[in-house]
Length: 176
Image 1 (cartoon, rainbow, N blue to C red):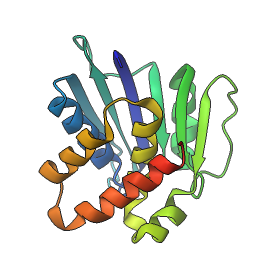
Image 2 (image 1 turned 45 degrees about the horizontal axis):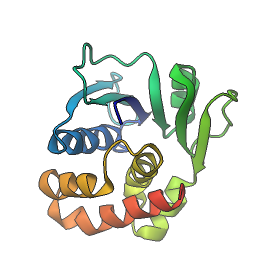
Image 3 (image 1 turned 90 degrees about the vertical axis):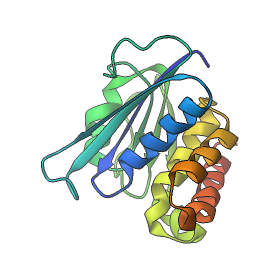
Image 4 (image 1 turned 120 degrees about the horizontal axis):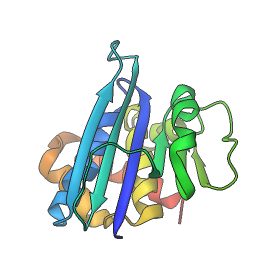
């Protein structure tokens, strides 16, 4: 595992900050060093939103991510802004339902998932973020899926646990 720097980005209201927060809690539960750094545009809901998460077994010098090992984008403006910060050989996971262009880079691993459609299949369009988070955890191995599920159980709303769990598993299937 060593050290991973991730950016989650999309519109406000898509659960961008929640994705990062649950990943950060899971990292803490695994006794790793963690940084969670949210950022939102002035519009909040409907405006752009992103957060950076660093999970490392080393000390973390700064919460700012300039060379991301992985980026998860849920809309086109986020792809336009963050595609360039993925390191060569890094991972870009995108919601193919909302991002209407393909990445231009050929030196990164691109995973395109129809997250809105998949979320609807699982039971609610509101969990598209969890589909993408499941794919990220499966692809990067940043933390064990069990740790993420425990973080969801401990820090999420109990009534959404089963739905979120199914969404994470569905997302993981896309990269298996």
